[in-house]
Image 1: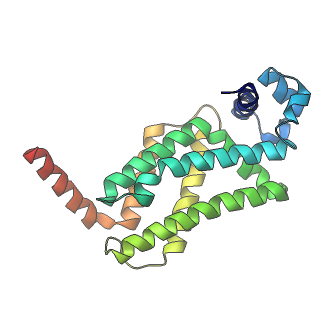
Image 2 (image 1 turned 60 degrees about the vertical axis):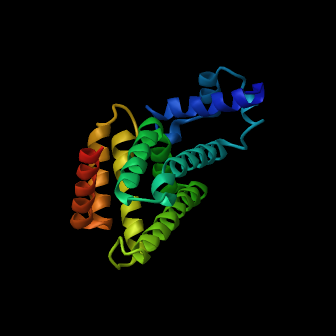
Image 3 (image 1 turned 180 degrees about the horizontal axis):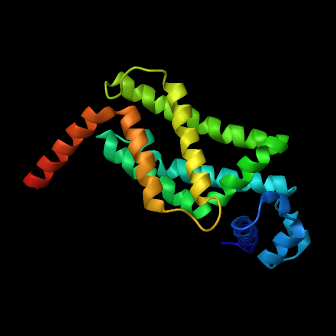
Length: 209
């Protein structure tokens, strides 16, 4: 990693460290650069202002979430283990970076720029989940219903739970949050019958293996 990349990453890491214990409104460039261990002027080589910093952090966590959600969003095969894998990884990412979500969502109602960033962030996930639900509906895996409304409901439930439990320290129990999210998603999308069918197939595979 080049020095410029290391400096930029140090600033992002310092911001996350600050947000674990403080709201975004208390963040200043001076405080941030003191935590990062570099000069105040260096901040403006990478970011226009603190809002630009928060947008960069939000964009980075969005990339991380989409990356770990790939198994369910794009994978082939039994959807339940793919969904479990993706949601487990989603919870892990937010357990590590939850303050970013809290900071942007808290600031959004009072800041037009961050309001748009937060809305776009949610919209991207709404679109991706809607597409996947519709694909599984076409395949007969999910019952017919308005895919977009359900996608929005599931995504906002995720956002609320993840921010509530992981938005600052002390964090909530990761396993409990993961179990709750998985239970709601699987029941809502696939119902008890598909879960039962998958469990039967899993046990047969274990016996035969």
